[in-house]
Image (cartoon, rainbow, N blue to C red):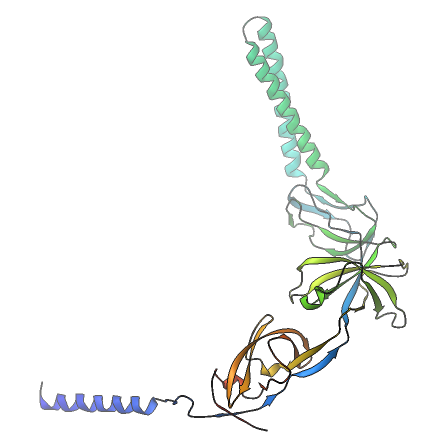
Amino acid sequence: MNKYTIVILSAITFWQCKSEEGTTKTRPANSDTTVVEVTLPLVAENNGKISAIAAVINGAEAKPSFKTGGVIAKTMVSEGQNVKKGQLLARLNLAEIDAQLSQANAAANKAERDLTRARRLLADSVATLEQVQNASTALEVAKKTVDILNFNKQYSEVRSPINGRVVKQILHEGEMAGPGMPVYVIIGTNNNDWKAKAGFIDKDWIQIKNGQSASLILDAQPDKSYDMYVYEKSIIAGNANGLVDIEFKFKNQPSDLAAGLLGKIHLQLTNASKELSLPIESLTRSNGNNSFVFIHQNGKVKEQAITTGQLLGSRVQVISGLKADDEVVTTGAMYLEDGDAIKINR
């Protein structure tokens, strides 16, 4: 290696070291303070009254389907139409089923001829009793196959099981229907089976009891209140937002309602309490109802896990994890780590 190569390598090494020096950023632990703003949780009196958006439904609901699968040849009704119990709604293309039925009938005829021949041969002592019995069993199986296919052909059409209105058509002509796959959704129009359904957060759901009184005010009738009671509480969350459904029944069945009317359901719970809430911006991390905030303690911050509830506009309900006198960081919370020193902008 000559002296010129050594000089060039030394220069490159020196330049790399200087570059690394210039790009390295270090922050001595707790040497800097971050200017933040803090707030106290807002305390509100909970008077035990809760409400939720409710929709009127009819207790009679049907989702008729085909027993067998196949291609839909024709649909007879569309969304919005009224239907009567037993009315034909849709029919499958019967080409495949008819071919299977023809094949089964041919097999049954052959089995019957085989049995007749076996009996003649038995009379001539050419066939055995076992062969006759086997032929008899084969005929019986063939006849049952024909019965099954006739039954399936009978249920290769969909009829309405109730009087009602078609609110949704799921499958259309030319589409493939599987066994048990609903073709329509039908809501009953019987005036003696109206209900209301509403979704509640888990904290409210757990406090509501079956049989508890409630009241419903419809958007279409703001001056009228319907007396209701809790009929059935769902045991699983049925909505994407995690709300749990509760069904309410009318104490006196009205006759002038329609499925889909919206309103608000109101209940009075037995316990009153104080509720805390925080600005949404104070949450640094959130996963469902599990969230995290920073609280101020002696010039530093501590990460605190809290349980949150429903959204209240620009604020969020705090169910547990905070006290009313905790100073919670709002502005600047996203730039902090547990234990960081802070300076409060009062």
